[in-house]
Image (tube, rainbow, N blue to C red; front, side, top):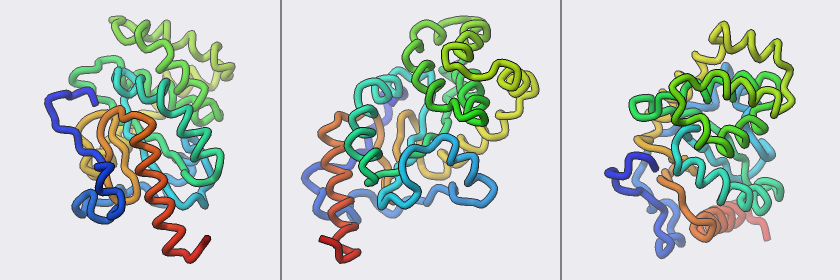
Length: 221
């Protein structure tokens, strides 16, 4: 997480046998409203029928978010998303007080989402974060990523010029705050919050435990 002064709130490995006790009752994220379903689908991975849903509340300029995206997420995608165990939803939570280019990056990604290019731009933004993050005027470099993602330039530029994605970014940030998120990255997992760029081993312990518990509840083998 970027605000390193905050304590990490994680799912303790030793307590995984009692998932319901890992976090106190937390406010639910208001993400399933009819008005946002299609928007979320554009930046989701995995089956809507997956037994576990993870909401990633992230900031494209946050270095810990970059660490998660490049080092951890690819393995989670292979092991849990592609196998039908997890649906992954990305929410923008730009910490604009310390990351002055985060909103511009989020806007680029959400304009891309309208054209089925969210994940391509997601990957490029994190890959080249160290290039665009310190720029006083990131616009030209961010614009160059449109071509790198093979997104159609005209509708992308129209979206960026009109600010069409800005209400979505604000809605994402408000939903993240309602969930209890205070820093990035924060993950809302079946009623609990996991904070920070955590190693794959911890993710495996959490997701395997939740999956096992849900299979037991459903009476599956």
